Length: 353
Ligand code: G3I
Image 1: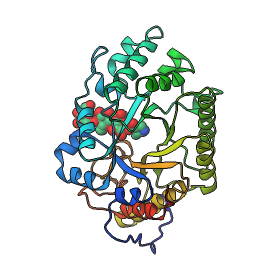
Image 2 (image 1 turned 45 degrees about the vertical axis):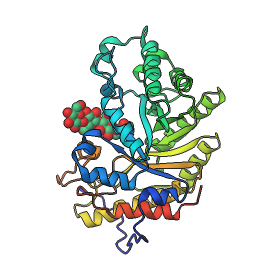
Image 3 (image 1 turned 60 degrees about the vertical axis):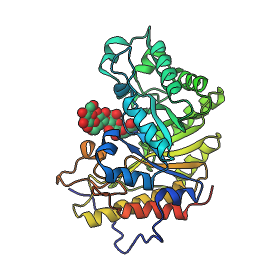
Image 4 (image 1 turned 180 degrees about the vertical axis):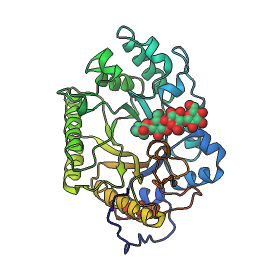
């Protein structure tokens, strides 16, 4: 039932001092942050305290997506995302916007209202309104999220999304140009997943994304960064350091900064024993970060959540033994785990930017 991933039981993940993750990152010219949900920060003061201690960057998990800020086709509701922006600002955290254009998290009315005739207007209105609302308060935007899907069978590997269907291949460039026109100071990022491993699927996606980024840059598109989500599968072996480093170097050679945007280690298929599981998860965090942080174009690491109590993994990758999942740096009681040590060690080991 569970994969026998190598457990390096001799490894202690020793860290020196009690310095926070954000301070260890800052010491190397990096940023560390996490995804957050307004309701969780309001209801759990230990989470709030931990977030302030550990993070100097915050990204809304889902409360800045179409389905949450657009209750109707004519109305925007920034209540919860504004709370998160204010929380970040009050605690000297940089604020990331996620995400302006995605094929998921579209509101119910989208399907009934948007069509090939009005889709461009809806896209332009959304990007203009949202980037204007946060202008001057945003570090970077995931302008377009997950636009590449080789399994959809197109020669350009573009995902067959409503945006592609309604607007054609140039919707991506249009999105970036629209965001840049409204907020010329924000870093504009393309964000995607499924790139981390040495297998044909991830390789095909790395190749397709590189082609997309090259094409956007060759057309003078205002794109400044690439977001590598980094949802790592604990049971999957095959992190190929050489291939990962080459991919990141190729992205960096386009003049793009790189952000590790949604890092976690999904432990669904790992052993029930939480002590062994934590060690395996920590080993993956440290191995992966040691590889990617060698690339100096990598400027930020964000985990997709801070505590196991609030992780998408619980709903999306539940364990068959029904035990709580353990993918993040802090446990459900906000106590640091070996994963925290692993991230701390990787920052301490990383070359200075
Ligand atoms: O728990 C609340 C519930 O209390 C509330 O009444 C309800 C109202 O809408 O929302 C519930 O939260 C849901 C949340 O998942 C918790 O399960 C949100 O509706 C739902 O939108 C949310 O899904 C998010 C998903 O993206 C779609 O937006 C996940 O939290 C989020 O982790 C996931 O994140 C994506 C990235 O954006 C892109 N990369 C992949 C990543 C994982 O799928």
